[in-house]
Amino acid sequence: MNLLYALDLLGTAAFAASGALVGVRRQMDLFGVLVLGLVTAIGGGTLRDLLLGAIPPFSLQDETYLYISIGVALLTFVGHRRIEELAHPLLYLDAVGLATFVVIGTEKAMAFGSGFLGAVTLGVMTATAGGVLRDVLSNQVPLILQREIYASACFAGAALLYLLKLLHWPRPLAVLLAAALVIGLRLLAIRHNWALPRAGQPESSPQQD
Image (cartoon, rainbow, N blue to C red; front, side, top):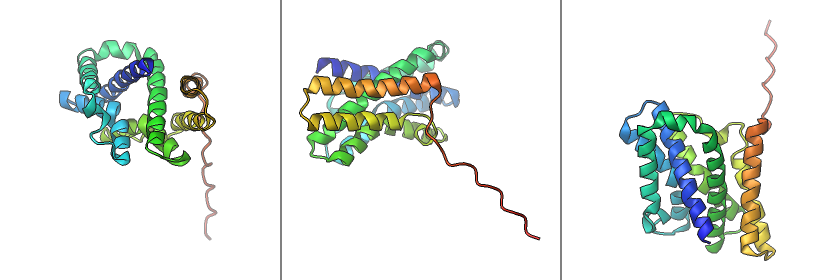
């Protein structure tokens, strides 16, 4: 699907910009900013391909992903003040990229014979592992380990895609519905500040006499 490929490149650009922005905010030099942009954009898909044994990884088979990642990261380094002003639109592009990565990752895992948990896990990994690597490299708590509806939206979309394909729904419709679910959940979570529940703080133990 040419549209899916176009959205994949768009998502790659959005992820590269978000990664590079983190590097700028952490006052990294040009090399550090480029590394964070590249890792965020292609890290998840690369890890997925290595686990599946799809060698060489997708970004080395189609270097367009590398050029876009490096180019966008460089532009972000140079014009980060302008990019910061576009932070809100970037959230929408990030959601589109997230959904596209989930769909591509889940489908690729299924093509390699993965079952439900394997396909869903690799779909979520494709969308989120790059961000995890970015946060680890920039010494931050990974976003998916915080309360935001992020990885859980990916899980829902990947699970829906797997089930729809299992029921032999037409591929374009299955892909569209799964991507729409991820985008919808992510944007609603941002708008309404949705978050997963977390364990309450433990009660203070009584003092010993």
